[in-house]
Amino acid sequence: MLTRLLPTQVNWPLFNAASSRRIEAEALAALAPSRQTDSLMERAGLAAARLSLALAPNDAGPIWIACGPGNNGGDGLVAARLLHQRGVPVQVSLIAGTSNPPADAAAALAAAQQAGLKISNDMSAPAGTRLALDALLGLGLSRAPSPAMAAAIHALNELSAPVLALDLPSGLHSDKGSLTGAVAVRAQHCLALLTLKPGLFTAEGREHCGQIWFDDLDVRSPTTEDARLLGAEHLKHWRSQAATGHAKHKGSQGDVLVIGGAPGMRGAARLAARAALAAGAGRVYASLLGGPADEVDPQRPELMRFDQAQLTGSTAAAWSSKVLVCGCGGGSEIADHLATLLQHGERLVLDADGLNAVSANASLRALLKQRQALGLATILTPHPLEAARLLGCETALVQADRVAAAQRLADELACHIVLKGSGSIIAGPHHRPAINSSGSSALATAGSGDVLAGWLGGLWAQQAKADPFDIASLACHWHGLAAETQAAGPLRAADLVERMHAFHADPRSS
Image 1 (cartoon, rainbow, N blue to C red):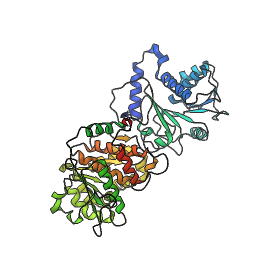
Image 2: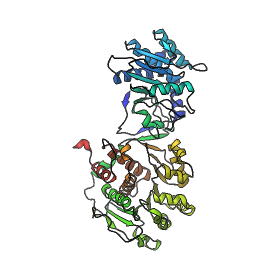
Image 3: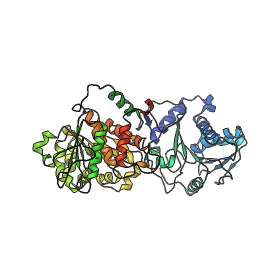
Image 4: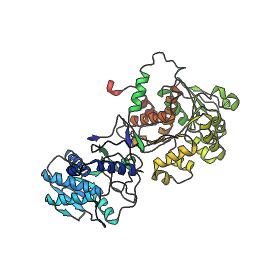
């Protein structure tokens, strides 16, 4: 069944290339030999043909289908044959393979030729093309495209007509979302087939896929997912819980202590504190580091000051049970307090300069790794550069495989991780990673990460026993949903807090 995927209200299972191939093999084995007209390739081609007609319904101009020699090309050839039989003008370009094509792809080529389609080796779009189909490469490509493939990709990218990629844009790694070479198709639409692949939703995936569609080809598999795409399920569940709490009071909603905001960076801590308050924490305190004890936030008198002199081991009883949001605008001053906070804070959200301090100090890193064994819970919220510092590698290596980088951090540091960026990754020990589906470039502005850290703290304060993985997933999706309310330009961080606050209510109920 064809589904327009994003935005999504539900979570979706994601399968890497190896799992997708296994699911495909199981489905092929279950097909009776007498039902080859109902093969997976026929189903894929039919889905592609139907979506093509929906995307380009008028009769003006041909549809150009660029096919590779493998099964992805076979899907394109089936779509071409079905469109041709419907009377749609179609031009097919096929890159010949250097070896024998897969049996299904060879059968699709023979059927297309028998139907009267002319197949060309010229990778040039016909005049007046109304839609192009990228059926060049497909699943599991792990090397740079050949020169002929790269030329075909360039031809697709130079079109003024929209491009529909079949399964995934050619040149995009299905598991990682990174480019396998110097070039990949930039599609306006992508039809994922049989399974949803992680690379569609993170790193370069969303940039190259455009609107993502999905058809499972009527295959249901018991295979365990490799990752999960986060929809709005967590937010719906949170709202249903919030609606049944008439006897709640500020004491039952939990406390948050934001530690950061060194001179010149007060705003970062204030944004985090505002976010924690807007998320629903009962009481929010801020300890602004370095210099005189400023009023926390004149525009938010609800926020309370916490003297940094109290951040000692001997006074830990006064703050250890609060959710600590640590590092937002912390500067170098945060390092002076981290050892104590790491040893005593029961729930810790570590961001920004707090992460940088850990990456630069082996003893702090050791204290961080010990927290899980002591029953202390931690969520780290690095952007790619901060993650690279923690992993001791280049940022490009983090971005080349974001899912693996986040999981490695979670395993090495025994923490839960939110690796921020396009398709933020949530990872944790003993969890399969999740990829957030919400968000937009409106978040590419100063302070949006501080808001996320504070919001995490505010949600966690209300549910002390919640799985940190679930809290991180909820906060990350909520954060992204608010960004999607911004039609153009950046969403300023202070405004982001208010947009997120508005999502406490279900907009469909108003």
